Image 1 (cartoon, rainbow, N blue to C red):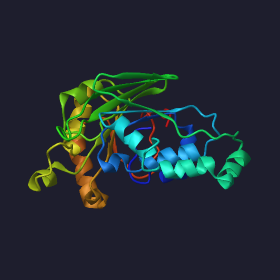
Image 2: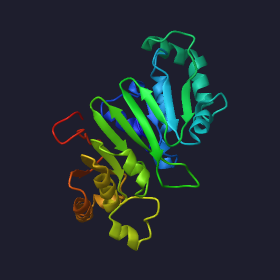
Image 3: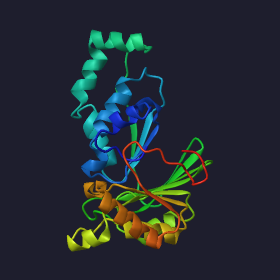
Image 4: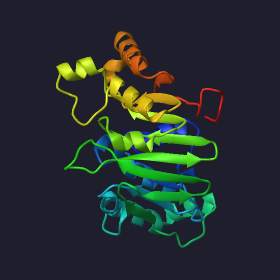
Length: 261
């Protein structure tokens, strides 16, 4: 799982996934639109568990450990909630009825602050991080490359076009790239710093030789048909592969040949 923005937990369940199925979470950076649902996800995953699930591992740039501790640590803002669920007989009964065994354990998360160049290994996958140019020096930002047997996916996170993301994305099957808006609009409104538009995302995808480009994290203006059409057209001027503008709950194939979703 990459990032945990508004209503992520709700959307995950609506898409047919369950928080207890997630074992690893990666943050690109800590703007609220990328982490505001983190407490909901943490508490839902813990509350719906029966105590024998794999411990959640969380990775992200600086602040990841502090935010996690501040949410669910012994003195965290949500500690009164989980302490009540651990100790109250009614909550204990629900936990036992679900299949858990008392005493119920407090939430435990392995949270790690990582930087560019980190490589995390999982069961059949590896995740590599790289510098993304977004909100420095206020917030550190990362892009990620996920390698699996089914293919390679790159998540640019929020970034302006930069060589580090291009190098990370070399030869990837699929790239989810930030596309805040069409550059003509961005430049005329002074919104080009630290973000990518349609041309910037397409240029990075083209330079990296990516097979498919999915434009994400867009200004609501791109919901308008004319603006959406113009942005995709500008992307296709620079990128010859398959390009699409994502919508909520989209299912995206790994490649254009009917590969895994």
